[in-house]
Image 1 (cartoon, rainbow, N blue to C red):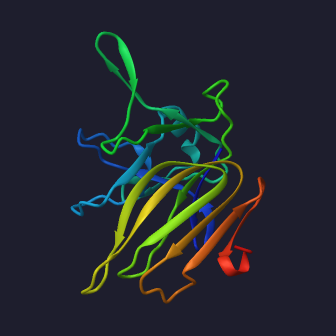
Image 2 (image 1 turned 30 degrees about the vertical axis):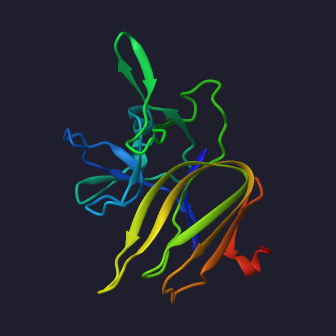
Length: 207
């Protein structure tokens, strides 16, 4: 499975960075969403296991003392995070919004696991003062949602969910961006045919 980021400008490799936890640990994670004081903000964290970090060691760079890893060409899989609870029970972890929690592992670590084709961090990019919505169709599952807001100079910020998707095969993703948008179109579609991605304004994609 490839880990990628989807925006109006196309598909790019997802990038993991060092994150500091409340305990002071500094894991390498994929993050999607927003943290901060905004009560609507929410971030999805996908930590890389030690085995994956070891396998990708030669590709890790430093940025101001933090580790950075572009997951370009790396094959990964998802592993559910669990926790031990007495008496000797193991439960699957969920975040404070009840969403499943995962780690990224090397593709060969989980024998017999489902061969998921893409992990997609989807950025909807609403305009200033607006929101964004999305729909999915085909062999795709919404794994979790973060949430982010985009700053506005003296005005209300734009807000949007930050979907994390599992794409198993052909699918169609569409998103509509409200608010003040000056750079690109406000209605986009991404189509995956099982091998290649095409992204563009919905009017040009037959949507």
